[in-house]
Length: 389
Image (cartoon, rainbow, N blue to C red; front, side, top):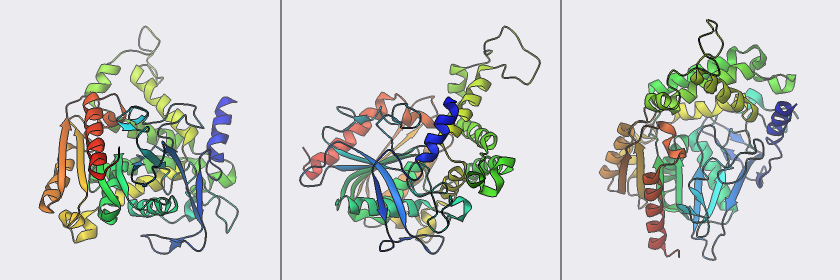
């Protein structure tokens, strides 16, 4: 019964989320990279802190694949704390006593911004696969429309990790005059072949589930829970490192004294992954998983600028701070260094730190004091430069 309540709550968030929403009508269509426009559409978002009189203290937070706009507040579906409460809040590195922080659900998501689980106004049914495929640049275009709606001409900073970092880089390339500082974390300027391959495994797991129904499961009253759970399990492995898995679980057994010689979850790590998969399907839409992973796959910033990444940042006055983590094998330090080299070639102002940790890709979401200190220092320096007290 509790599981059903959570699922129903998650589905309800698609059209009527527990957060502010901006609805853009036919007079403000969103141009898409796939061709055509999306209209009408909506964006769900959260804000923290207060916008100052000069409108100069706004920071945009860009979320990763499985995130949403609930970065620093209790999640309305799961009841859990915000996914970046370690970083955002009063007195924290992104200090909501000083800054006006905005976090929006990405285009193609499932927590209130138009996505495949949203109602298609032409049919009255969920979009499903009738929603055009979206890109990282489409997500950023939509965010820029939200920032316009909020009456903010220039952001103090844009900050995000993983897929959020891709959005940060796209902001710097598409709207350099609209952002003073950017912080791309644990990310890359394009998705690697290996990462595309991991995503394809996840998508095939979803689409192989008989309850996927060709993407029409919401209209037909089913849900590809098994497929999405397997996709999440596979992806979650890539967010950790071998060292962190060994430290957390090793080969310890799960609530038993010996092997059962069956295919039950004998090992703690198996039980952990199953739990991660089951929890994910309660709050995330399977078609959104397809759309958002595809957006990451298509991301290739240099490809939009003649194959030369430095051209994406040519003449940019934006300040950059890149952060990578030594044990992150999903978005490696080499990926960040490639961006730094391009920024140097473009004459941009850039700093870069590789943080020693064994926690893997998810390090940017965890308790990493060095990362917190770098974030606080970079944001506060940007604030001083523009006169934000």
